[in-house]
Image 1 (cartoon, rainbow, N blue to C red):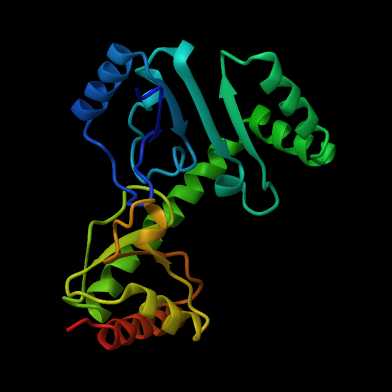
Image 2: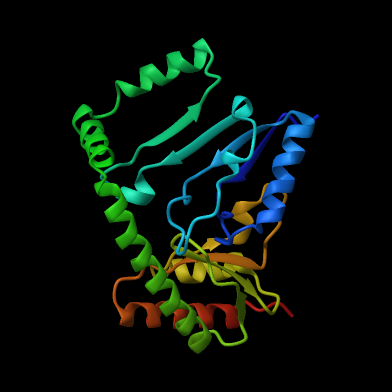
Length: 231
């Protein structure tokens, strides 16, 4: 009864970790066996810190594949555009795509096209990946220093965020509200589940500008976790 599955291309969202190659092949075989469509999320597909794995779209039947992503994660707020790719576009989808294309700035569309056509995007991505990797390494050190045994985590393989798990039961909504009052924004884990999972998790960006800000944020998070403990 499952007709379409939503999966990440190379790196799982929100955890930011890579799936083992054998698991990816097994999933591709299962999708083919049951004739399921794959809706592939490639939002962070180009932001891996190391040599990228083969994307899921390279392993599945291209006739049952749709890929969506956004230029914003790679190019920043100047390119707030998403896109959807598929071989099997029916006339109704094509009509909606054409209607939306006229709402976008033609100048920005041409600028993005020239950036990709010239090959400069590859140079930009190399620098961006290096910057994100350095920030993630720094965040690992600071998490160990400020949170100690309060949070467990697995270092991300891509992207700009950490997926943290509280080692003691806490009211994560209270943590969110307390930090928000200090102008610090986290994403409580239950936002990433429609069935109430991940209540002891949170996602936190590691793209802070400046070392003092990062120390202040993590100290505030540590205090909020202590005050929100349950039992």
